[in-house]
Image (tube, rainbow, N blue to C red; front, side):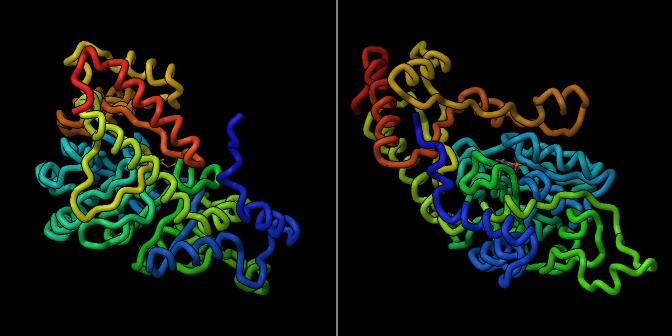
Length: 398
Ligand SMILES: *Cc1c(COP(=O)(O)O)cnc(C)c1O
């Protein structure tokens, strides 16, 4: 059996024990949530970080802080998880689908510009699969049209773009997920980072059920006992949601963050091995996501377009064969958001996205959460054998 606990073999249990032993009260260096926020914001050179119970909640918090409201429009890439559309709907606003680029699979700044209307309030660029969008172009558009930007970094940790900027530090807010499939896991969880104090206060209060004591830096509700125990004390200034991250999850998150560089390095090693295997094979059965010059990739997953139909090989057949040779399986891309029944059947959102729809059908996503070289070798061997098995049908070996 695979050792599924290897990702949690650091200081997770120590911190969990601290929380339980202290009866959920703060230690000398603060609560686990405060410690996680401090460490995360330092790592990203940001003034403020705010934890939440998911990477969907964090996006909702950001849109609320931007003032996104009924009748507004928010531009999202069509090729992404549906949650990017759900959070727009949760604000009473309309998701507008932007198309993606053929080579990077990421939101196309040119199409963003085409989809801007007087109602547009914000853009959610999604750094899909571990690669950053063209943030320079996106911020130029945002500034020109006075729009807010929240970078969805759920799949992208601590990599840089061609301008040497870290993912999540360029837009007004950066948003990450700690759901279990992501680089860092707290089972479920998320975090936002920003340098804007007003946005930070709004995000924390909105996700903290509107408690007025919450500040940009501090997630504590009970500041002064004498005030808090007074019958005249009023607690809530705004309507909000309870999006708090439980202390036990924050304890795991703090331990996970200590190993973030290692986790990213492991995924990069697996991603680069797939890339090299495809390059060395000399076949065009798979066309990998292109990493533009100067960019780094954190390989949340390794994504490539399946090109076998022209040789009469089906997507399903290729996947089955890869699994037969010991491969971990291949994931398809989600339906584009506009084509998910929740959106399509309810006529939520607008925007023609022909490239995204075409790529979605061809996408293959390979796992990158292998523990060590031995596990990576299993995937690479399976991929090589799969290619070789098709050598009679299509040119292999360059
Ligand atoms: C996982 C993910 C989310 C949602 O995060 P949750 O923590 O699962 O709510 C949002 N955007 C992207 C790109 C994701 O991959």
